[in-house]
Length: 317
Ligand SMILES: Cc1ncc(C[n+]2csc(CCOP(=O)(O)OP(=O)(O)O)c2C)c(N)n1
Ligand code: SF4
Ligand SMILES: [Mg+2]
Image 1 (cartoon, helix red, strand yellow):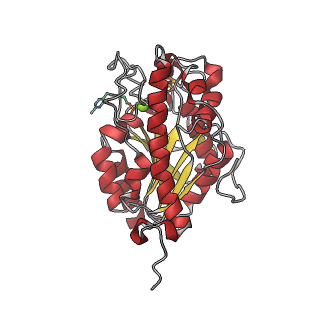
Image 2: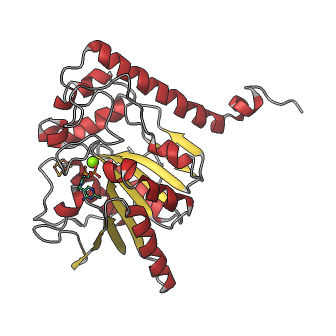
């Protein structure tokens, strides 16, 4: 599936060379593989502490392009966006307008600890691509809850899932409030869609953000062969909508394909162990609430008569 409708232009080069440190079945490794296939030439990757940083650097640097190592900068945990913005500004000052600087940060580094830096870089419209690879917890340190951990999921810091007290943090919605040129969600179950969006983002200047769902085998507690299936189910159950945000507020929401019950996704993962049908119904209600909010925005744009500004009626002059 390719929701952008654009012809694909990506290559067959493998930019991640063994040995690398990702676990078998790691969703982050697949996301990075596809992302680099789309934008792998002339890049600098900035990555904070998290699973990616050690996995691409130990036992040896493993990101390779055209027989040379891709430049990777390991930055402090809370500063990926501003670090990348600084590098891009320095390149531009030296006359290099071509090299893309990509921040590649986990959900902890994005939703929580790097949130201020992310917001500042987005507001300044720094000319970078920011990717949040989201495995929905602090996985490199053993699965602590992050601002992206879903309702009902167990972590080492949330023994009893707090369903009623939980509040979501919607990264694309937050980006809408920053008037960014481009933001998109993607999953590794739809690589054509992911790569087409990455190619498209490469052609845009200013701040661009990706939110990519990346299942984690030990953290989500499932067998490694289910990584792609879970990524697909997250979309098919409506938990992780595929969408694109352009020019600050033009939201394209992929509405087709919501065909599966939430339970099918939840019951495959040990992190949701013990949830009752009632619990799942309450998660479903939260999913519907989010869809209603996203739908309202995408409908205002496709049908101005539905705009809250005109009370659902044409003004009539
Ligand atoms: C300022 C700071 N606090 C804590 C840590 C310890 N630390 C290293 S990786 C990590 C988890 C990162 O989580 P996330 O950003 O979600 O990436 P993931 O590990 O899930 O890939 C933590 C807490 C650190 N390196 N620096
Ligand atoms: S712990 Fe999870 S996110 Fe980290 S490398 Fe392993 S599978 Fe990937
Ligand atoms: Mg994480």
